Length: 204
Image (cartoon, rainbow, N blue to C red):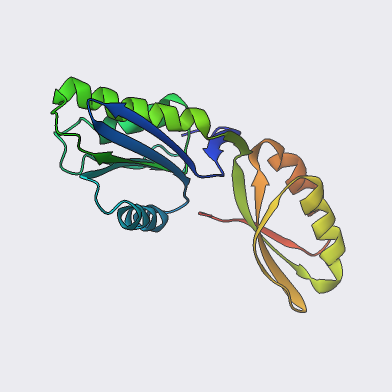
């Protein structure tokens, strides 16, 4: 799969609420990077809203379209998690989890009513949470002598690379994310520096 140059995500937590026939649907959107982040957010929400009836959610991670999960948490199958994920995908957002907390109001909404409620709550929270466009980063490992630090870091900063990890001793080892749309020129400039080793990294 060809990676895009940019992707959409969020950097702040957002909250929105939708009501239907006495039931309250509170949607919370969080920026996340890993499945562990998602599990932690769900645990946090269950503590924050202990009296809610359902904690339905959907998340999408990464850029390969394979890392996602939906949960109806006791609601009829397909009425909660899927509609939430549908809203995430309609905005083309990743590295996000939306959890919709339901307080039951005493009236059954039926399948169409539930789909509409979860979809609307997710849509509302995405309207109030600013989307951020970020460059897709390609990870590379660089090894170089400490005396070359300035030269290397000048290129790293000039091309808006992100330092992911660094070990700085007499011999330095840093892992950077190079913006995909500037990959070739960044690699050319880094390769101009003598005696450094550059290698792509399989995963970030």
